[in-house]
Length: 324
Image 1: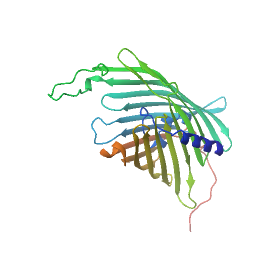
Image 2 (image 1 turned 45 degrees about the horizontal axis):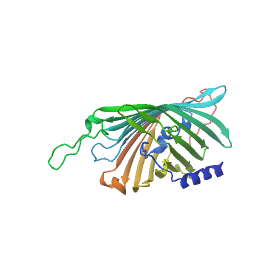
Image 3 (image 1 turned 60 degrees about the vertical axis):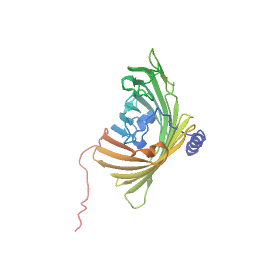
Image 4 (image 1 turned 135 degrees about the vertical axis):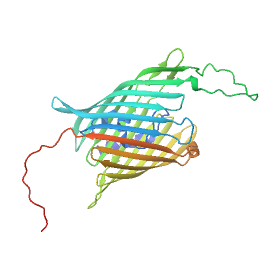
């Protein structure tokens, strides 16, 4: 299995793993696996509800804003465990362009070796819209508005289309790896006033859990890559977890457009868990590309976890640990 994962990683690298401009960007991708790969639905064995908000390029007018929410849980059918989930994404690329995505997720589970193989699918709908009422046309040298362009709408226009994602995910107690395809059917959007489409994208994620001997610290290095063969994004991350409650991490991000060059950034992450609530914050510091002209990006997430399989209660014999 490790050889298979290594081969997938090599293939993904040769293909220049990338991020399409249509897909939302999350620095804390480990909390948004339900967006990238439907096979992770119900993976923790609990009912998990996650909300993540990203404010991109702080300091720019009409900067992108993204809100993502998902809920997932396992269930048993015919003595076999499955996963199910739902996700919603509101992505405002600017005050003019926005998209809304909603989908249902199902994951089939199979024990394989020392871990679990998960195969997932996500059917759903995606809506794209342009608000032409907020378009500001350029003016000529005399200060008069430019001529109207038939390609630029003057009212609110949009269209909906069916969308689908598929993915495979394998995990053990020590490591995990997953491959997924987003926008499998490359949805088309066509009506009298609106025409657009979304390209198919591919992503890979892999990571390892390293428990430090005789300490309460656990290291979690990971890598995330995404491409549509025109652009790509790579995140290499290392997180440290203390006492399974507090976390801190650093991530190096590289975005590249084959035609327009590359951009990079450094991400600083902090998080904490209190009972059933987990929260985290990430600050994305741009180091190259047009991003250096703004004050970076901010990202917040909250997770609520409800334990479904509660341990049995009852009397148990135990010895006193009192020190005399």
